[in-house]
Image 1: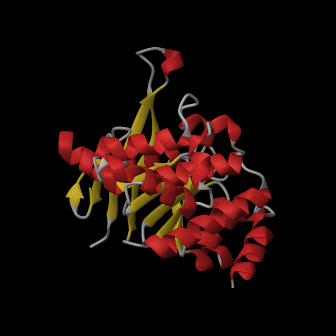
Image 2 (image 1 turned 120 degrees about the vertical axis):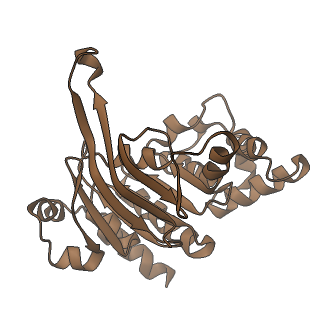
Length: 270
């Protein structure tokens, strides 16, 4: 059984700028995909392709208009109250904008402590040690727990976002363009960190991105999304070596320089 299964999911929006009588726009159109435990799937497409909308729906942050989303064979549609809270403990999201995802009035230690307190995973007296452990896992120091988000670089803030997502020891991570706002060299550091953490912790990851270089490095399988539909999917190497859809070929032609930095980081780690 797959950890996550998406069956013919459709999501529609009404254009708020056009008023209540405006036509519905289909953002996600009968999308199906599966993700097995401990593996990674890349979801690739340009801005506006529907990939982020789908990612949010997978965590019940947005409603769907058709189809079904299953987690360990159970439909998410019927989850309420405590059941929904327990699901969200097992499935977390890393957001594109780390600054926007963090409360500027909270220290990063407080942000991590809040997650642990809400879900009551460990006693209060053990939470400081867990916070220090989480910061260490993402390459930060325990003393940095007293700092505020504006005191960190963009890459460091994304490390905090990753630590917060990992605080509940989830089985599924939805990583929504987590490196798109970072410089190429910093992108490589964050991607190498995610690869190391997945190997260590064993979570499954749906990695949403707009370029294929990032996905090739992290994900053995890829699904290419265009105008709300999956237009091509398969193993990453097959899609890279022999794209079947013109849109995929277009994305491949725009592969950025991050690939070289990623490979350099992989070589250094042995």
